[in-house]
Image (cartoon, rainbow, N blue to C red; front, side, top):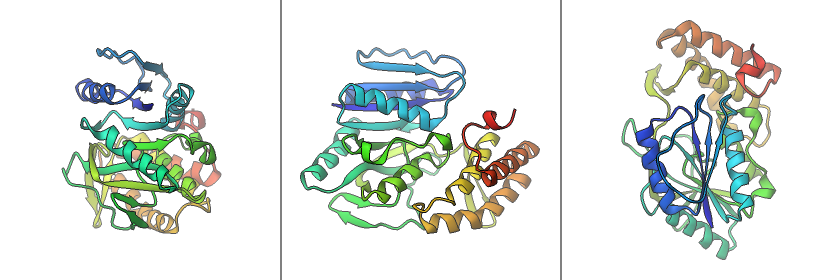
Amino acid sequence: MIGAAVVLYKPDMRQTERLLHSAFKQFDVVSIIDNSPEVTKIDLEFDNIHYHHFSNNIGVAAAHNIGLRDLITVGCEFAMLLDQDSEINETFAFRLSSLLVASRQQNRPLIAVGPRIICSFSEKTIRPRIQREISRYEDLVCVTQIISSGMMIDLSKISYTGLKDESLFIDGVDHEWCWRARDRNFLVAIADKVEMVHRLGDSRSKFAGVTYKVGSPVRLYYQFRNILLLLRRGYVPNYWKVRNVCVLPIRFLANSLLQERRLERIKFMLCGIWDGLLGATGAYSDNWK
């Protein structure tokens, strides 16, 4: 069986129902983890659905873990993680699961595979400038990390890597898990011929030659804090550490000078830096009353 874990937070229902309609056709089980303040009313019928609502927002990592445990409990072989902002076609699950099955048969230690991401803002395929390919196997491009949405995981291997790190709450959760998996000698790959449209951030801005994602002010707390937390971990790639340390001052200036709600953004960034230096984890609301 193949299952999907879909995380919601104040979703655009037209887009979310399109995603769920496609998911219900492709997956044997769908686990929905809703972090919205109010229950999301889903006007779709599907027999094998698990719905969890957390009005206090437990974070992306904890939501993923609840969904993964659901799918493991019912006996799924593979699990796909999906965000509400993603769009998948009718063959998406089959094509990714086929690559995992083929890797099993060839005794390759592939634990997760994801699609090529098409940014919904630029309508262009995302190709990281710094992250380099590690190796290629036919239609698989082995890389350092992939994003969580569209990631399909071989659940037979997840006991060796563990679940997502809930202490990070949201930003960096997907990459940290991939780095941890690679540290345990597993492969993470992109399916070279499978694409998925996905929304990355709320908008885009450019400052000092650096293009960056613009999100809500509170996301800056997690972005700044989690960079400082992950710098301490030996399995986190050095190129990621160097890049983020160098870009952090630029992002601070850009969000302080160019974006709306500047004072609010400065507050969240400073709180994130403080908690990152102190090693505080979890939700912002747990650390700042």
